[in-house]
Every structure is written in structure tokens, then in C-alpha cells.
Length: 218
Ligand SMILES: [Ca+2]
Ligand SMILES: [Ca+2]
Ligand SMILES: [Ca+2]
Image 1 (cartoon, rainbow, N blue to C red):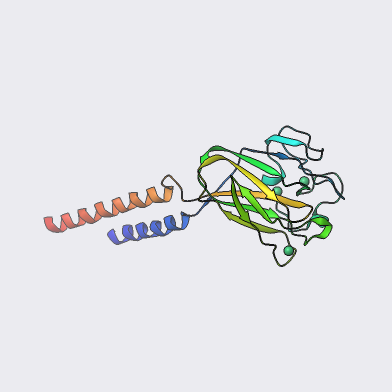
Image 2: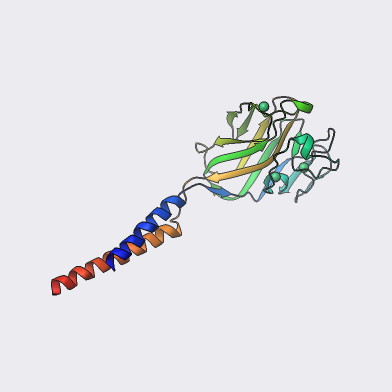
């Protein structure tokens, strides 16, 4: 009986350790200048907030769209964006866009991941040369190939905040992005696994104590 309980406790320790990883945090909205028109329309056409979704560079605010919809394409802009109409997965800019993400609470972030196109200059579209996140500058290397890629930024040294202002810095004429993800570090509150572990450890200790008591009583 006692060994079975202790075994279960050990299993929960393993489960708890495996859960102690970063968690994704979703923004409640983002504000930014809309994308622009080249061969096609690289707008955030399905954006849910205010602003002209089919006007180049129009200021969009209070909503969510292509940058947080979970859709991540493995195609370069010239394969992913046709036809004209702006419903493709990317937002593409001919400026260095400033995008402000709003969160429901003050949060200590650990990582920002951004998915960019890297067309090696095809059509003027390249990987970015860097980003600025809440005033902190980060460089981005141009990957050897031309496939779209995730760039990961360690933001654990930034002060906790309910907003992240991210400026994308172009390497050439255009910059294309289709998804942003935000992670926090270790959870601030005990996870259910931790509570279960302590509960089972307690049961195990009580069972052990009872057994020893019985032995002594005999
Ligand atoms: Ca997306
Ligand atoms: Ca789009
Ligand atoms: Ca490249």
C-alpha cells in the first residue's frame, strides 16, 4: 500500500517537472499600419478592429487579424498571396511598421517569436535586419535559404508590461510577416500537477506514519 502511494507520488513529480515550460499568451488586440499593395494586396483584410482594412498603410486599432490567427504559411509571398484581394496570410509593408500588442494583464514575457518571409530579395522581399521590442534592439540574420522562418527573441530582461511595441526593420524594400507568438516563463502560481503531487506526498507520509504506528502498537 505504502509503496504504491509513493510510486504514484514519484510519477506526479515527473509529470510536474514536464509541465514547467513556457506558456503562450494571446494578445487581446494589436494596433498597426495596414499592409501595402505591390503585385497583390498585402493587407490585414480580416482584421477585426477599427480602420480601413483595404487601404494601404491605414491605421488599424483594437482588433486581431492575420498576425495572431494561428495561420502560418510555409510558402513565400509570391506563392501564398495570389490572387489580388488581400486575403492572403501575410501582411507586407514598404515601411518599418510599428505594431503594438495589448494584453489583458501586466505580464513578464520570456520570448517573442515572429514568422517572416525570406524571399532572398525576390520582389524586394527579404528577411528583416532586426526588430525593436519595447525599446530593446535585436538583430536578425538572413537565413541561408529562402524559406519563411521563425525568428525568436529573448525578452526576459524587459520589464513586465501589458503592451509590447514591436518595430520591424526592413533589410530591403519589403518586409512580410504572418504570425506573432508570445511566451511567459515559469508559471507564477502552482500548477495542478504540483498541488496533486503535494497532496499525494501527504497521503504517502500519513500512510507511512500509520503503518509505523501499527508496527509499534503490535
Ligand atoms: Ca497568421
Ligand atoms: Ca493578408
Ligand atoms: Ca535568406
